Amino acid sequence: MTAGGRTNRFALTLAARIAALFVTLVLLAYAVIATDLIAVVIVLGAAAIAQGLGVVRLVQRTNRELARLLDALRYDDFQQSFAIGQYDASFAELKATFDDVLVRFRNARLDREAQRRYLEALVEHVPVAIVAIHPGGAVELLNNAARRLFNLAGATTTDALVAHGADFQRDLVQAKPGQRTVTRMTADGVARHLIVSATELTVTGQPVRVVTLQDIQSELDWNELAAWRDMARILSHEIMNSLTPIASLARTADDLVDDLARRAAPAAAPADELVDDLHAAIRTLARRSDGLMRFVRSYREFTQMPPPTLRPIALDDYVARIATLFATDWAQRGIALTVSAPPAGIAVTADEALLDQAVINLLRNAADAAASAAAPQVWLDAGLSDRGRPILEIGDNGAGLDPALGDKIFLPFFTTKPEGSGIGLALARQVMLVHKGAITASARPGGGALFRLTF
Image (cartoon, rainbow, N blue to C red; front, side):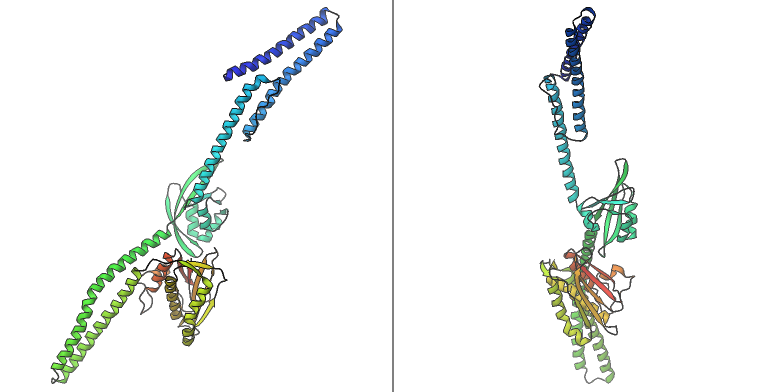
């Protein structure tokens, strides 16, 4: 039956009750006016009252039931049903309709809930950090990537973002919808480049800016490293092709001069002096050729680093082993080594041989830098960063780093030592990159330089 049929059925029931009440009232009026039958008047009056109350109860009950079901819809309580009594069978079809509506609303809500959970899971596992900036300055961290980036479990504020750099705070707060900006933030002492994108939404009548932060530091590091390795490989190939015949010709020329000197033995002294000068020039050329070849071979090692073989390494055992390598030799050289071992249980997953290359290079650099101090001292510390990440720190009390150099010290070919090759720090950086870590340099409190390896 149609909805109109159900409405007509209710109207007919109500009309029948009203008609019965009307007939009773007419009979009551007739009995009062035309007869003296008191008992009949009382009975008819009682019947009229009962019928009137029945009409009122029918209407009120229907209204109450409709109000209850509408409240259930308003508050998403879909466990309710349209109640009918044994004398309200005329509402059976209305009950079925309302129950069907409630079931449809319940299913729609379940679908929305499933969709919401799906979207939440999707946002939660997106590798791009997503934050919402509210008008009052509150910053809501919307997914796991954002919480990892800021090392927070909940919300923060735009004012607190200055801890990651004033420029980063400005770029995030002033991010405009539809624009992409590259910014730089500092987290755990490590600088990272991020792409910032924003969009504007209206939530409950309030404007909310949703900002995404995509970490591109790893891609930048690997692209830069690949460029340097390609350049070093090409240069080493070309230089070796040129140096090999030069070194060979220099040695051959030296032998030829010896042979000429023996043939011209009876000649005068000026000839001997000229031969000596030729020997010195040719041998200098040979030594420089050999030195350049060794230099190029070192860069070949830089471009041919093997893939890491990773395994867990306990930091306390590792620090103790490294300290043993240097303690005796440095004690004889007057260099004090102070070691701060971490608590047991802190481990890193790394290639121990590659890690040794980086740490030993840094310790030797620290010893060279500290040699100029009155009481040379080197520190080797291990522990956890503010974010709970394993770290190794190598410090010295030397002259320190020139702040103007910045990250240039990690570039291949760059060195501040007269006899340096520019390979040590570049190699250490490459080792940390293959371990998905970072190396930073800063001034050590109290003077000198401090290098930190963050895993």
